[in-house]
Length: 113
Length: 114
Image 1 (cartoon, chains in turn blue, green):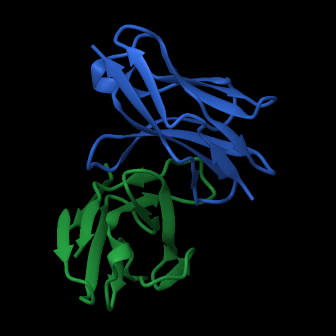
Image 2 (cartoon, each protein chain N blue to C red; image 1 turned 120 degrees about the horizontal axis):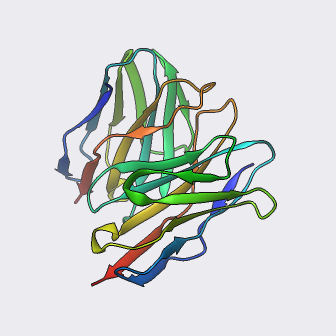
């Protein structure tokens, strides 16, 4: 069985500072890893994914994530946070050959002015 | 380009009433389709998924059912709603399980059962 852990319920950061939202995973095969963002009363928006290749993945809105196989982590990062980045962030994993996603419980990011 | 729609956007229903939520996808054929529920603005629970017309897999036994009457239409139903059915229902699609494609989500339906 696969699982995803997002150890922080909430991350607080000041505007202009770098941000990190943590994600670790557990799977028995090769994973596909995803980050989504959700604004209030909206569906999930895709940010970025790791399939294979370069461990540093760049995505939408200046976000990036680093795949670390030895630590089974896929942390989301941004060099300079914006107030508009405040939202709920989900990490998800999918096994090769399967379409269902397993999600973490989500991390609320609050960026203060 | 592909688009996913959900209808209605919000719904308030009394306990014991029936439910029908609709999801449609445009711009693709034979997608895999999913229904999720999100309670209390947090974690996502996969309810059903479908790999083709008439093919439904249930992940969690409960008061809900799903149907796929057409290739790009996915319906979530209930005969009698419970208070615990309240939540934010999200439909999603992916082109194929064997591809590296992304799962994309619809705008969601906010269901309140009173």
